[in-house]
Image 1: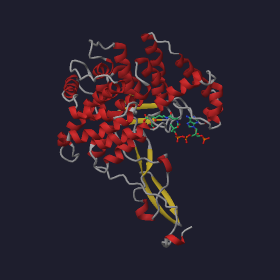
Image 2: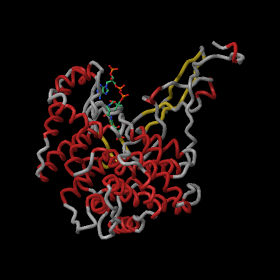
Image 3: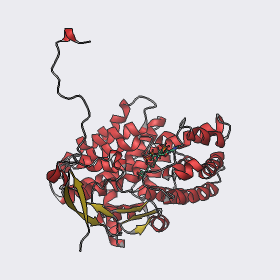
Image 4: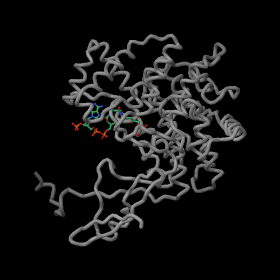
Length: 428
Ligand code: SDX
């Protein structure tokens, strides 16, 4: 017999079906609750609310498990390339060799951006934040490629937009870094693979040849894979809710970039590095003092805690290991790594952090690697967005293919009840 949940309200009982996912996750389907009883559920921050049934990413926060389409993050980070993982997320299966070649080829056909889009960079004031620029560029794309914009046109038109967006993302991100330095931009070179092309456009120079360092290419592939999707996080939920209004893909993803920028979400990777520098320079490396201040709620430890992971974040584990290896291979001896390890140790042995299950998250070690690879700190969240792009697009695509309802939560109104409009002279 299928499981049911019974809710009793004002002496009347209502039955609701229980839905079970392939990993035995269970949810009470309350979609008929309001219609039948007049009640809604209340769940600020959606801590107990499933917003969709998805086939893309599985996450078990208690066990520290993360899988894309059934494949473990550990195996994907070890064996796959970022384009392979993008294909997997977008189309549901790992590509065959032919499919991967065709996919990568179609990406190389769309790496250029319209020249007028490059001019948009000219209007940003010096020092403007890369994430603000990225948001602008995402919405600007909708003006430049209107032919395939309508998400209801055809699956072919939608796929063209998907390919365009994925292909142009490295070009745009690299341009943001180049323009920030006041350097001329580099145009994509189709002889390079996706990640090498990004590194070329970011770190190459018009004055000389550039050969991507395989150590850096490998590290970058891993970083992008680890960030590629994370089910219904804040930015992805934003992309889905915007997409549910049938807004175009660029607009939906632009909203995701905005959500990611916040320091409680993707913006934490920039905050972590600045925090570690502050601990090194201002707190003189006194991590015990820093932990004590975090416990007194005087400061937040960026890179710690997670809404879903109540064990370790498996991505942080991989990144910690990768950090040691990349720094060793590049011959970088960054004292910030030592500060990070001491902070982690101090926090993880403190009852406050233990009781609240506050472990390092994906943003804790990524910044140290980005820094070693040569990225400026304000670019870190842009790199998160570059990695998250296939995830956002896959989630948007899934929503549209299922033609999900428009997202429209309810509320409990707690403001003033009806009152009459007073004349301005009588107001106090
Ligand atoms: C990402 O959701 C995703 O999947 C996101 C992400 C992805 O891939 O998309 O994984 C990427 O966003 C990672 C998280 C990056 N953010 C940070 O590193 C910022 C620091 N962390 C936090 O602000 C916080 O932990 C959140 C926002 C990540 C999670 O918030 P929750 O689940 O709402 O938990 P909470 O803020 O209510 O905290 C519970 C308790 C509170 O203490 P008490 O009220 O019980 O006394 O833990 C404390 C908090 O004050 N707490 C912290 C803390 N994080 C939580 N105390 C000190 N330092 C911290 N970092």
